[in-house]
Length: 193
Image (cartoon, rainbow, N blue to C red; front, side, top):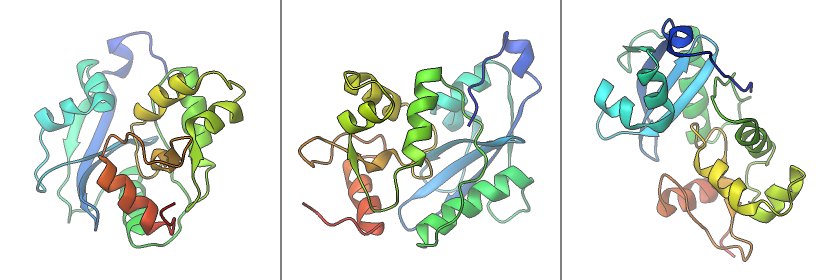
């Protein structure tokens, strides 16, 4: 996972983002990828994804405003390689198969990227608190900042922000909703405390 910064809109204007939808047992998700890797995953209603829906996703919205081109693919069509790997990884997770995380193309601050990288190291079925996550990146007093970075994760589920819980073991905020967080942790074999 690399931190990406551009010198302005013209740098990203040539970026193409391929987008499709994937139905899983949890929800239907839009999956977006550049030629470098997964850029975003977000839930959608139905299988139709539009530029307007994609623009509401914070990660894609920034790229669209900077001039990125969106190319939509039907769920049943052949996809570019990075998008195929992204959809395969999401399907594998939902079906309970482990699969190596494909390449990511995430934009964020150095702090956010550090948090997201650490999230990827939390094993399936395990959880840690925001404070433990902050301590693990060498910032033990930055639990709130870590929480904000976790909340800004553009690739939920595959970059497993759902594995971060409250210090008392409670299921705290999750961008996809607490019922989804509970379902994901249950899917991974975590028992309720």
